[in-house]
Amino acid sequence: MSLSFTGKVAVVTGAGAGLGRSHAKYFAEHGAKVVVNDLGGSVAGTGGSAKAADQVVNEITDAGGIAVANYDSVASEEGGANIIKTAVDHFGGIDILINNAGNVRDKSFRKMDLNDFTALIDVHLMGAVYCTKAAWPIMLEQRYGRIVHTTSAAGLFGTHGHTNYSSAKIALVGFMNALKQEGTSKNVLVNCVAPMALTRMTEEVMSPKLAPKMKPEYVTALMGWLCSEENTLAGEIIEAGMGYYSKVQISEAPGYIFKGDEVPSAEQIGEHWREISDMTGALPYSGADDLIRAVFGKLKSVS
Ligand code: NAI
Image (tube, rainbow, N blue to C red; front, side, top):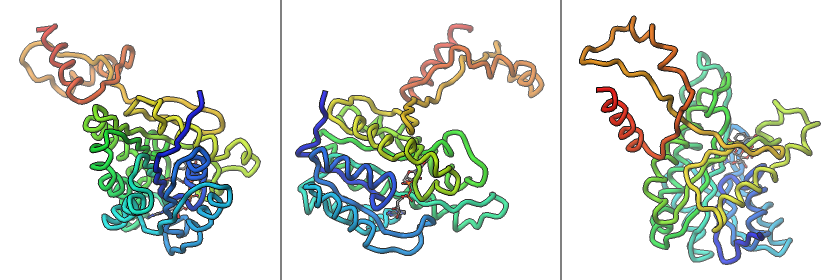
């Protein structure tokens, strides 16, 4: 199997450094025309410069690829719209959107200024929403699209000092779960990737010794697969890095049903905690409707 993106147009946000740079270069090397978006700020998302995106565009074009820079911040509706417009104006459309742009402002919740909370929601969650909103009608209309949101283990499982970041990152999973209900039948597939890579964002917490093993390219290979025509899955969450690829799943336990019409007491809930929380036989559901149907089925079976 050899994947080709010839004829496809890819937008990668935050592609001026780290993972995004690697993704943009991959799609260009494999034939796509690429919009390299980056506002070129600090790791906290402050400041800005055209240099970051220009540098990556130069690397791509020097290697014989096709790319154009865009310097908008993803964190505004106009910015998101203009990023997608750049793809349409230069390359005639959009087929692939990698929502990758991100920043960090770590602090314990007690000490966190709420502006640093909303700033991260604006970039990670709303940035993905604004770009997707602009790309979505085009993808639905052409009945083809591949979108990947960049989530994080910090959101899926939690980390100290990351309430802002973790909240934004797990929100992307909810965004994907609902979007997939609207896009999958039209071949617009939305997935999430949780990367592990050594970049400027993680260099303070990762040992430089890990650099060769933590190359962004390990994550990029997964982006390639998820954004290919060959992939038909949506709603996946995949942890990726260092040669490790693993599906993450939200699943619901079989649960416990109190029989009869009496509302159980708090004490009774406590008494049955073991059954309520026993994950043996837990199931993922393809949507909330499926879950609700399953719950009604269980209730009927015991009544
Ligand atoms: P990075 O700091 O090297 O790259 C992020 C890029 O996004 C930067 O070039 C930055 O200028 C750009 N950016 C930031 N705010 C922007 C905005 N408002 N509009 C446009 N561009 C903006 O960091 P890295 O590691 O490459 O991160 C990429 C994504 O992966 C982020 O969403 C990050 O949260 C996520 N991630 C990374 C992990 C890792 O191990 N490196 C772990 C989990 C998630």
